[in-house]
Structures are given as C-alpha cells and as structure tokens.
Image (tube, rainbow, N blue to C red; front, side, top):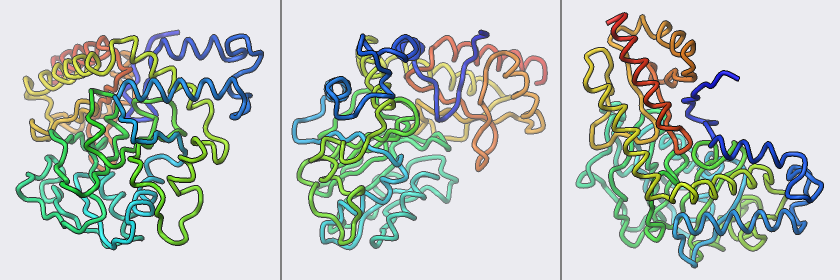
Length: 360
C-alpha cells in the first residue's frame, strides 16, 4: 500500500499503531472468541474495556473525582442542545462567545431553549481572532458561559481559558482535546466529538461536574439527561461500543507517547514549522491573528486562487490528501492532530516549497 498522509479535519487520521492493534484483535479480542463489535455492552469483556478507557482518560487529563465522564452518541451537535437542557437550572439566559462556524451553530441551537447573550464576537473581522476579554459583556446571572476553544474551520484558537467567575464554563473541545494538558477543574462541562483526537466518528465524550447533574428543563428526553447517563455508567442504551474500544486504544497510545506534556511539545513543534513555512513565503498566507492560531487546524491560501485545483491535484499525487479548505472559507487546510506524524508535516512543507518554486 502506498503511504498517504490524510490531513482531513474529521473524521481524521488515527495512530497507525492503534489501527494495527484493532486489526489484530478484530476477529478475536484477547482470546474471547469474539470481535469487540459482537460483544454485549454489559458483558464482562466489554465492561473491562470501558472501565480501562475511562481510567486512562481520567489519568491523561487528571480529571478530578467530582466529575463524571460520559461516553455518548450524537456528536458535539447534540451537546449544543444538551448543554442548555441540563445547565439552565431555573435560569433563562446563557452567555456565548462567537468565534466562528461551530460557535454560531451552538448559539443557534441554544436559542431554542433560552435567551442567548452573545457576550463577544469576532464576526466583524471574519473570525480571524479571539475578542479581547476586556471587550466581553458577560451577564453575572447567566446559567453558564460557552465557548469553542478551537474553531476547526477558521483555524482560530483561544490563547487562554476564559474567566467565567462563579458561572460554569462550558467548552466544545472537539478539535483540541488531548492535544496538551488541561485544567479540567476550570470547567463545568467539556464535550468533544471523537473524530479528531479521540477515535472514530460516532462517539462523544462529555466531562461534567457532579453538581451540574440532575436538574433538566421540563420535557427533556431521557437520552438528553446527563444524570440518566451518569447513573447508568453511559449504558442507558447500547453505547457505541467499537468507538469506545478504539478510543481506549488511543488513550493507551497517548500514555505510551509520554502523555499530554509530550504531545504538547510535538504539536507545538509541528504547528510552528508549518506556520513558519507559510509566513516565510509571499506565495502562501494565513489570515489568523498570530496569538490565536490553532495548533490543530492550519488554513492557508495561495497568492493566486486559480492555482488551488492544481495544488490539490499535485499534493494528492505526492501522497498528501484532503487538504482542501472548508467550502465556507476556501483555500487549503491542514489538520495536524495528535496522530499526524511530524514526518507528514515535513512532507507537506517540502511539497509547498517545491510548488512555489514551480508556480510562484
């Protein structure tokens, strides 16, 4: 098989070692005579897989004991509704920071359940930065403050954890979780779709503080109630068992790499190399404020957009695939999550230099 580097924003690249182990265990998990896909989610075999995955995630993120870890379905998009359903707790409004496409979707969904105060937005500058905290108009009586630490489409990342005071802080960490150490205790709720840094699409991780569980909006469906899932150990219904298993393999792989401090060093270096190649060229450009550039998603444009198609075709010929930017912003985007090897970033930089030499 010809090796290709997949720069997709999600579903995204998985560690090769994880895929190899899954391949070896596909038909028979550790002598059980079953594939993980065939196991009862309540059988002792899968229960051991589930418990190990949760424990490894707790260790990686140093999750305090007063937080539940839920393994759910529905993606981050379901959490756009579950957050207000579970966290309004008698209040009628919530604060949101708008920094791009996923923030806007979260705001639109929350507006179905409460008054949304957009406390700050960078829309006027085409979401190329994070609004300065001094400009935020927070509501002291808000049920919670929601933000998107990393906007996958625009490549904008918060350089700080917002100070929400006594208001619970809620974060959609789909595209940045596990890329570096994180102080979970600063948050009320963290949620993340798996298909970027955790595992395959279909699994969603929710980390929720105990005191925020148990008071939902009237009429909230059982499947949208954090307490029901927490009380059932994420097994109120049949969970995405194979995705949970693969996530567990990814967590073990991360620990084998040295944990999140080591991943932070690698991720910072990968992103730094790629941004330097862009900045050192008059042929490529990145529009994002330097202080707010994403480590995980690096968008860039060519000086002549007429060359975009040629760039993508020649990149694919060189084994560099899914580099096309999101349709809403155009250009290119290289997503360089944990599982993307540094050699892939070096190969992309080399290709970019050669392409500029030919067409610049």
